[in-house]
Image (cartoon, rainbow, N blue to C red):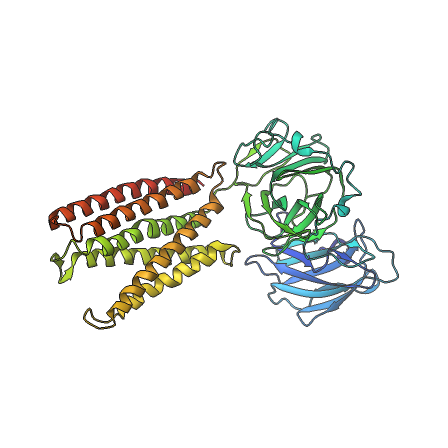
Length: 553
């Protein structure tokens, strides 16, 4: 049998793999014009290269190749399929490949119809995948699609029967787990009761029908969205976006995410009965879809996917980077009524947060207090030829810097990319200044040097700057993971900062009020030590509360 028709490599007695292929087909367009060129990439996902491939473009539902290919320099060759020159591309040799780029050109003489790229990948002689498909490219008489969805109500007028209907009032958690699948943050919240509830649901019309009724709602100043993914990372995700356009109207949009870039707009497809609204700050959309879920590696209604929910701002009708997102713990079959649990933050990120919290709200604070308030009351107490206060200060600050470095490495090694927002910027500043602090201290001049005061002031000022930036970084970090309705973690952190400020004020007042007083040195020591013990007790209480909150986030 001809491989051009069935896409099979026809390795004797062997069948293609049935699990999702570790390969994908991407294009630089989601639509095309007659005679237009489209860049196509065959890409290996992860660490699974391929040695052979066959690529064709076909009309949706068709079996014959359309258009023609042009090669860029690489390990590929053009083929003749169905007596059409250059209508397919295959490998030139069995060398290991991770990426192949080709250019496809549509035929100017044909009527424009939706097309789809089909490919087969050979990992080795016994292991191969057949008929892996790209997203559908629709024919467009105008310009190609924008790199990100433009949120204008006009893009969905053909499917909207009641644009100004209010789905928000009818969306609720009723029947969750009974007739529909529900996914929300906070868990088990009801959007009919709380305006701070991010919620989506899916309900199949019947066990044999592929029609699904979707709902989503949540507070946002731009858009809300949900998507289906094969993993818990952004990329290769089938997404629906409910957002405000430049005209202020709310519309529904379909997109495909390719990673940490703006998603590509795709046709809305077989969608009907779209209802969209914005009331106060809550955006809501509900719609009926017969679209097949497609993440390129997996396709169909009977598959399981991780659910993703994201929300964020928009500008002039274009969605911006999401402000927050939550993802299902497990892969979900949306045809089965259930209440889905969202995934907690990874243990690496939790360890990052815990280390930074311990470093700059406990050990760092203790080191600064020891240098400021115990220095004067522990004179004459030496250990190994050094003042006791100095040894304690150095020890706890070394722990602080070490914890900061470890936390910094953990976050970047886990994310493997730069995250947007203030938190990573603040974290980098804290890391840089924390690293410089002990380096400068090692190069300080002697105590009797006439310029010693410059070191003392710069050392103290840098410590205050680091402390301020660290507190700001912790607040922005807790804001990312605090999913409680009342922002419990943020409130506890506010109390933590207030408690520390109060202890500083008490110690400062005591230090200044007793300088010229007749109190004995012994009474000074007792008062300072008692205040320090009180600070440590309160600090531990707040620290434990926040660590528990981070652990359960």
